[in-house]
Length: 65
Length: 168
Image (cartoon, rainbow over all chains, first blue to last red):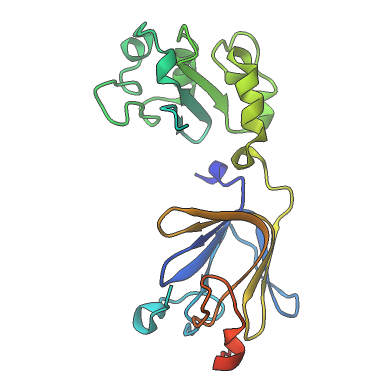
């Protein structure tokens, strides 16, 4: 329900990704806007092929927490 | 102290349920069993009828047991006395307390999320942080999260990416 997302939420999925939802702007280190969407999944395991986004690689490599 | 109050949502409205206020007038389930069915759990099914019908029946509750509000705050400003069980009409005090709660406040500015090169993801702005087990870790305005998978203070960055040579 989109109406419920009035406050921005960061969700840490255990051994997996970091999900950001709400109203946000995602930029790279140089300030380029990467994405302006309602939600995004960021890699937390360091092994994604689609950095900085999660591609499910954590299933193979595993993150500690 | 944890109360037994509940709230139910559809895409338009939020319905509040305060069991201790119920006098069992039975209007709600007699008029709209598709939504208010005491023998079902949860007993309120917000998909059981159109929003207008739910509002109509909630307005007939003689007590504060059932109240409602629009999710669109602009619409709440326009309600009239005819909406007897709108939370603002029936219990203005609760309504104003509700507006002060962070989950009902609109995030003023968009979150600024930056992916640092070969480093963490840095978040600035108002947010709440939730983990897999549903726990709210904190509400904050700044955090730096590990992206290399090696931090010893997960989910936060502790600088380990430099030692491990993490690269995007």
